[in-house]
Amino acid sequence: MQSCLIPEQKGEMVYRCLGCGNMHGIEKLLYTCPNCGQVLLIDDNHFDRLKETPGEVWRRIFDYRRMLKIPALKGIYLYHEFIGPVIPLESVVWLGEGHTPMVEANGFMQEKAGARFYFKNDGQNPSASFKDRGMASALSYINFLIQTGHVSDVLAICASTGDTSAAAALYASYLKPHIKSAVLLPYKKVTPQQLSQPLGSGADVFEIPGVFDDCMKVVENLAENYNVALLNSKNAWRILGQESYSYEIAQDFEYDMDNKVVIVPIGNAGNITAVMSGFLKFYEAGLIRTLPKIIGVQSEHANPVYLYYQKPEADRKFVPVTVKPSVAQAAMIGNPVSMPRVIHLTDIYNRKAGGQKVFVVEVTEQAIMDWELLANHNGHIACTHGGESLAGLVTAREQGMIEKNDVVVLDSTAHALKFAGFQEMYFENKFPAEFEVSPKSELVNTPALVRPADLEKLPAPGKPIEGEDFERFVKRTAEEIAEKLDLKVINA
Ligand SMILES: *Cc1c(COP(=O)(O)O)cnc(C)c1O
Ligand SMILES: [Zn+2]
Image 1 (cartoon, rainbow, N blue to C red):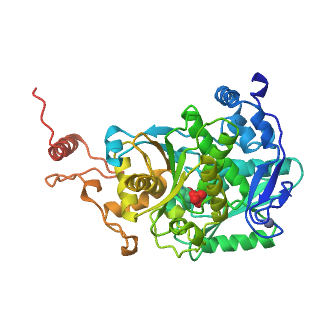
Image 2 (image 1 turned 45 degrees about the horizontal axis):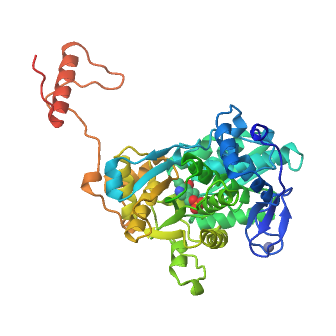
Image 3 (image 1 turned 90 degrees about the horizontal axis):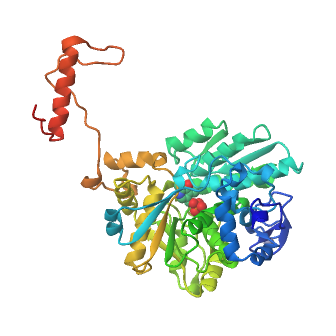
């Protein structure tokens, strides 16, 4: 085991086309199959060698590796053999991503939701969303291509609902001057916090009219016609990095996936692809004995994947939808790029599990907001998509997909602060009608201005008040707060 603690460059990774099945070498950056145009996944042709190591030994390798102090192994590449065995540790870019905490909900929340559950806080990644996992993988690979002289002066480009661009710009900026980045955002369809991120990282930022799906088409055109590196999840390296989410869950449950359920929001469907793929690999290599249930969640306002799985198997044909405004804005996607991957992996997953283990549910915008705010009233830092996961849990339980002793992990895909504007719209009852959200009074919270009417002089920035005036100001203000909070005076 000791000789395996520090991983070596091994394996033979290839792009595999989900359309024609052809394999393509990874020395060139590919996003779609040059023969048929379908999306790709990356396989390790030597994956079977991983099965020669017993599951028990793998578990010990990963548990011991967690104690090492090597930066390259502190993030997603803790699972190097499963994520990118061809990437040497010298090429690994680690900015602090991965190993996010899994926080159990309190008794009140578990009772409310009707199940035992945890939030896995992917908002605690460096750019405050799970996208950092995929970027660490994609940029480590590009760094490897640069170091080996296969490419130089890379322009990394992506379309984004906000978080992909934040992550791409962050990781690309670390590799300056070899990599520059440009991001395309749907105009006014990302939050001010998300817009500030690529700007702050020094990327070229372009705002495009329309929604994400329109930006994606422009980026695809750029990737087809110009020499740029596409960083959307169409890039299969992103998927590999995001598999780390599954590996971490397995490790945190000591590899016991019996009665476990993982719930993720679906937008472009890269994340659910990665989550399925990750558990499948650990299952194949004998690290876990059971495949957990996986439940994807979509808003009614952006639900193409849900609608696909609603149809009887024989009639299933993917139809993109026109999206409506959604508080789960990062998942507001009508034509998910990874749909062929989802269809492919769902089949394999259910087959290997010996029955249906992958489900998709839909939830209302109202439920997303209400559950997000209730969770955050109880110690969480869920974003709207985390709220979507929780609303999905409640729906799935009502529909009988969750059993009594199941333990659920909810993906809180970003930090609450990125989507604070939706909380503000809720508190101020300012949602435009098309969102279909109205506030519940018990969840509304607004600041109260305390300015006692009987005070003549008040402090102002640059204009402090002094002496008796100041003492009076302090006393009267404290009294007013005490009154509002119904505080009792301590007997002297
Ligand atoms: C990207 C994103 C999603 C959707 O993930 P996909 O891989 O596109 O399905 C969900 N939540 C947040 C916060 C995101 O940034
Ligand atoms: Zn092909």
